[in-house]
Image (cartoon, rainbow over all chains, first blue to last red; front, side):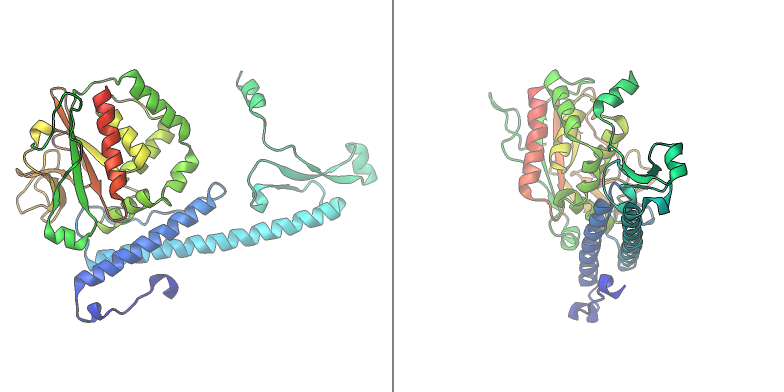
Length: 163
Length: 223
């Protein structure tokens, strides 16, 4: 992941100045942490992004070069995984949206198929369901349609269930 | 500790005391700082109604989405990054603001734990600045952030501190790990004066630190 790691060559690093190197690694860790936080927030609530990197435990200390490098690399790896997962998810949502379009155009070809809002990357509780009109009669006659659900239950209904 | 103003109208100093950071630590972590205010206050097991009401109001304003998006905000992000930089994993050892958020989601509310804990909770929830409450009488001199010297130890911490451990210390010695530990001199039943201590890291503006200290101190003072 060269784009993420940006192994820049500083004059200070060439001089072997470890403090400059640590400062640079800390800067990179900050940037990667921000990016990972953004990916996690963007995915919420449809997906969960793992942000843990399994860093070794110990007391707070001035972390050395090797440790900072491990943290930086682990964060970069997590971001890479999150990006891949996002791309795969986006592809799945795209395919589901295409399926929904085909289903809306020809419900009879997609009998009983149900696509939820979450399946196409939208928030909320609704779904599209290919069902026969007039129940068994519609099944026999081939009268299929896509029924759109009414969305999330209202608070009043939920309260009634709790009672 | 010195430096506290006590007058007829205010029992805490008008501006926070600034501690110092050891030169080696300051060179590694520019922007790291420690500040505190002292308030005449007695710890209580239950807070007054205004404090409890404020906790309830905060609970009503805080949801799961806040906890997720918190990491994108500058102050909580700064502490997360700092944790990573000092070898702590913020997903295991939570930053104070994230720990509060987690507790809020777990408990369904910011639970009252008496004073000064509630005052600190409110200030952290409002500002996300890392705060601690100590018994001021058990602190000596100015507070600082420094690495532990060989042979130093900390109450509640097994054995001697590993040389180079980052600590909050007074003139006698370490009083707490910089993050991820329990204070050696936290406020207890016989405490009569509380020191509210803020640890500032790079990216946390001074105004946020001042606000956090002011909120906590005014909560304690009003109680």
